Amino acid sequence: MNARLQKLATFLKEGEAAVVLSESNRLYYTDFDADSGLLWLTATSCGFVTDFRYTEAARRVITDMEVTEGKRFFSETIAVLKAQGVTRLYLEDETLTVVQRRHFLRNADGVELVCDGTLCREIGHQRRVKDAGELRRIRRAQAVTEEGFSYILSRLQVGRTEKDVALDLEMYMRRNGADRVAFDFIAASGENGALPHAVPSDRRLQTGDFLTLDFGATVDGYRSDMTRTVAIGSVSDEMKAVYDIVLAAQRACLDGLRAGLSGAEGDRLAREVIERAGYGAAFGHSTGHGVGIDIHELPRLSSGNDERLMIGEIVTVEPGIYLEGRFGVRIEDMVCITADGCENLTSAPKDLLIL
Image (tube, rainbow, N blue to C red; front, side):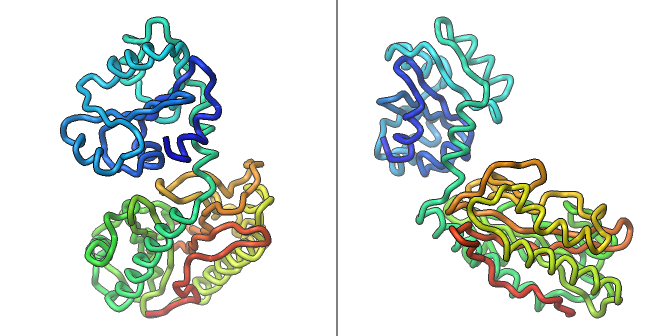
């Protein structure tokens, strides 16, 4: 049992077990990335089950526990756990499907199923703080992302569609170090920039547009996330003023973030700058989120979140202003929380670029 699993096992008592089904959590505890598998855990033992397609590959990666080939994961796992005297089984409430729960219920005679958030809270808390190996992977993913940004800047020109820009950027990054993209890229120009999660369209870049690019790479299972807004040809005075407000909000947050600050206080650092400028209603999403194996994970910089930031957490800082039917601006960096501030993992330029 590796150190991460040993830490998770500390909350289990005699007669209790946990089953980890979600891909992200399985990857965290085994370093094996596949879309099929099940990890079971008691206070003193653990095992990994997958199907024929992945058994050999799993055994090459997972060397600290037994890897077995299964055909009926749920019934076979329940049988193994019953044989060890398990009478209480924790499941992931955030990702467990109705079908999966039905399979467990069908075979769980004599075993109490607990799906009350306990397991997800334990895992989520453990995954929040990144170790040195995780941080190295995130840095590599960010380096690929920034190389992609440098590449695409020289290829942004009037007439290119948002779809073409997003595809060009993705292909470059995949050819230059990304195992896959971190999420579906956003390339939003002109009035589409007012949509925080716009889907790239056939709209062509025009002189006077803002173009918002939100993108990232996945390297060795870990992700990066960066947003830049650039101008095509020229900007109006209002566009520049809005850009400067967003940049000031981001810098205020970067300057104030530190361990011990609540997620709500971190969010407030950026939000109050935008509100003072009169654009509070145009900033409707949270200021930031954790990044790691998942593109959105703990912690969160959002109003109402009283959880305190901890040393070693990775979080984005991404305020924005979105003016319906006209344009939008978002600027996003990733940072690592430290005792007295934060280390910015993003070095790409963010002063207004007019291409």
